[in-house]
Structures are given as C-alpha cells and as structure tokens.
Amino acid sequence: MRGTKGKVAAVNGNMEAVDFDGPVMMNEVAFVETEGKKLKSEVIRIKGDTCSLQVCEMTKGIAIGDSVEFSGDMLTIELGPGLLAQVYDGLQNPLPRLAKKCGFFP
Image (tube, rainbow, N blue to C red):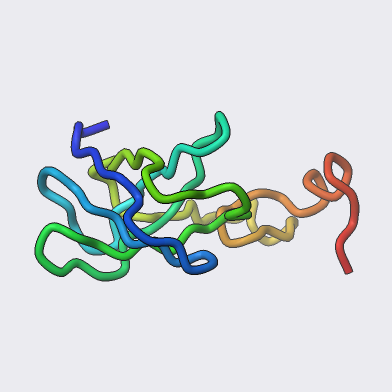
C-alpha cells in the first residue's frame, strides 16, 4: 500500500464520498475498512481533497468515519485462456466457487 489514507464522508449505496490526505488517481483501487473487512472499491471521481468510490462488494455496514486505504494500483483483471472455461464476477471471483461457499443467488 502506498500510504494515502482517507475517511468515508458520505454513503449512498455503493457510492462513497471519501476525504483523503495524499495523492489519489482515477481508477485507483481503494479498500474501505468496515466491520473487520476490507471492501474493494475504485476511484471514479476526484474533486479537491474528496473523491468518489464505487464499492465492488456488499456495502452493508459502511458508515461515515470508516477508514479507507488507497493502494496506488489501478483496477485490473487477468486475461488468458483460463478465463474461457470459467464464469467470473466483476472482481474476477469464480462464481461456481462463490455459489458453493455462499449459496446460489438467482
């Protein structure tokens, strides 16, 4: 992690406004820390020292004041022949494995 930190300033579903204290880039990966979990998110807007994050996971429990860590890395996925034989979600988690662990969601 690069070291830029922030705090959630506003919550609107999977969109979070975050006040931050250092350099932040568009499309950078950030992690919102809530209830002992780090939720992966992407910077989609920067205005002054506040940015908008789109959280890529379930956002239940996120609250104003939760900590945010910026990674310094862009949101990426791996591409290759192995992708042809599998079905993934937007974070490149294999859906059949998630269904076994969490149950099937129609």
